[in-house]
Image (cartoon, rainbow, N blue to C red; front, side, top):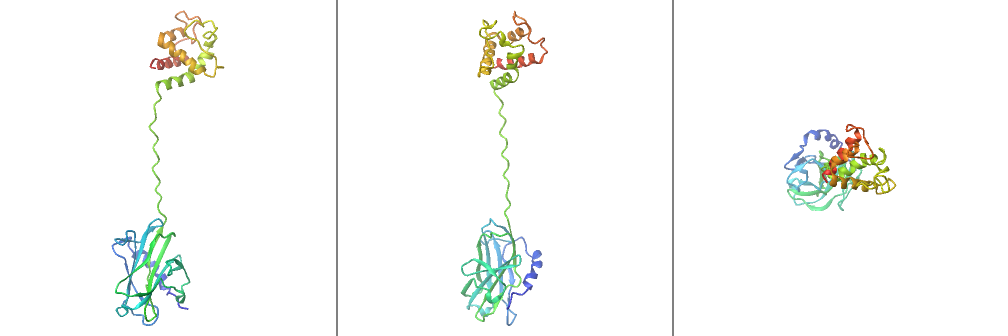
Length: 291
């Protein structure tokens, strides 16, 4: 049983450094006869192109729509003869032949079992061969062989294959979406936050302003009347009390009252203007002034 010579596989090492990454023409390959007179003037060309044949490369990805373009230049004496065309690829030691349906199927390497890709093709002085058009779904280093069998029935082929590499496409990670420009809270949002974080506690427990400034309390007749936390809307209602009082009497009026001045019946609530609660109230009222 005759097989393709082992020389074809040994040539892989030489090909690694002999094939350029990109050329302007397909690779020129000498032909040899499998039997009979080993001398032949036949030559072959093979090349991988991503642009339909304008340029040739040896690297592509599984996502590329590519063409592997072949060419046969038979012996002059064979021009005009009918011939069978053979297309073979090797990947990791396994052979695949292209059959008449256009698909690549496994081949054992035994020449009697080699199926032609095209039959009865008239040989011209430079016969183009569509080795493959489309995508290659497998990754790895492929060795490509081309051959023909003329009227004498002798297989003429490329003992030194053309080598190409197919890899997975590089996935480009999109640039992360930049964080949106921070939105500066409005004055009302800042004041509402300050009231919830620092002032509502003062109203309820420092000692409780609501002890007097509440409906029915000792200060119920003043302009400042709060509600207890039992009211689900106490934060908004009590905030509004401060807002209205600042608009009608001003920030300083409230601050003086909290230190016991201005006839405040509840006396000094903070001890001094250096206390943190006093400072928090002052900061809050400054925001309310801007509303």
